[in-house]
Image (cartoon, rainbow, N blue to C red; front, side, top):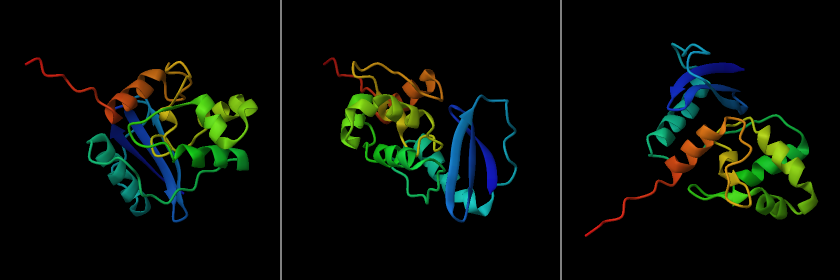
Length: 158
């Protein structure tokens, strides 16, 4: 597995992957990791697509993914990929789509263990009342990502 650390507007992004796909994309506060001087060939496309996302030029990702998790977690993460850019759903809606409303805590837990920050968009899942809840990257990052994907436009006064 290759690893690269790159700057993003939300901190240092760590990407881990190999020829089988990207296994981890995570973020940490600036200063906790050194930015990599060289990007491994196998990770260049992931770095490029994330840069395009942050520049507002990309609304979806086309990467070979290889996250490691249980069968249930894989099912939950796959369902997250169906949430369109700029849209949100509630944890309850996500749980209903997966077919078992009693599994809401397990679904929320699987979201929290999502190893592919931004690319598998768990930040698009919110509380039933519209609140920003439960985000491993921190609620300030979740808010930033949602605003980045759905910026409010200034209304014209005249």
